[in-house]
Image 1 (tube, rainbow, N blue to C red):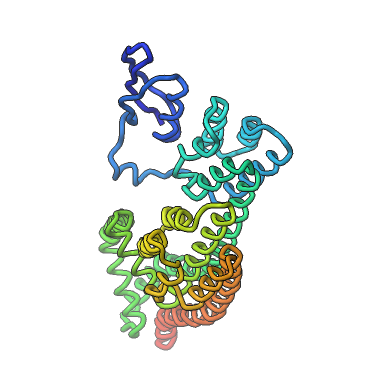
Image 2: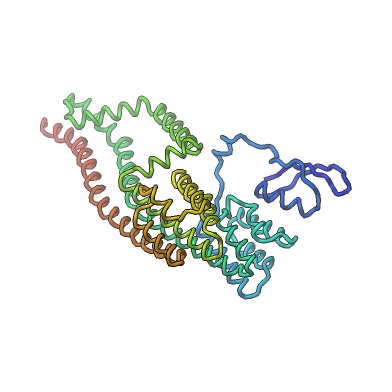
Length: 402
């Protein structure tokens, strides 16, 4: 993206120009190396938020970030300079957007900008959790160790989310097959049945009448249905991307039977993993909670973590504040955190909780899959049976009249 800037030089002269960067923060850092004071910086030909929302942006995946941090950690352990490491990783990256980001970060670090500050210029890629761990590594002189922590954390999150995605493959496949079968029947079979009924002047059975009515409705209003569905989907996606819509969506998702319980386990595992990793890196508990709050996507959990952080900053124990929110932080976690606080091994205790939830999530996903499979088979069987009766009954009627 191009950014227009106005800046004052050391001599007091005003100058304007454009600079290309991945983000506004990156553009600001890139301009700083020219020793000028930026007074104005905005994206050139800035589009409306709605048009920007409709655009597709190729994001850097969690897996790609985990690999990046792992490789960077290994290269720094091997005494390869940061700039040279970033340049090497940039040349190996296939994704154009990520390659550009790494090139800009390499340029910033080469100009003397700390790695943590350079990463913070790309908040959509490197969140506050990653930046804080790198900053902690810089202050302790163990950047490679901090990068390894980040990689392990991202790999753990990727494994958890991978289990959820795996559970959704089968039902999505069944639904896709169902739509394909329905499409073939609507396009190829039903018109021929209608012609057959007209030619023989026979009275269709109940299921056949229902299917023919459905076909007539689709044939008459298909354009309205497609247009209406498109606008409804766009509106819902846009609404759920707003502050109010996201809050309602997050609350609704946590209250959904079974899925809500599974999501809570995922958020709890990520919460414990975040806080444990940050504490292990030498970051204080209240700061670790603040950073975790910034990285949580669910608005409900974000608000609760904010309250916990406020209580801890006020001198309360984390376990005592959590007791107020047992609908979202069950007694098991509260008691484990209490033990960790009393023994001084909170980071270790939290990782034990993460391992427990990893196994629990896998069990829940396996149970969900085992229950869903027969339900989907029965559902698909009923649909196929109705379609078969609807298609075959007119044929039997015609054969019976011969």
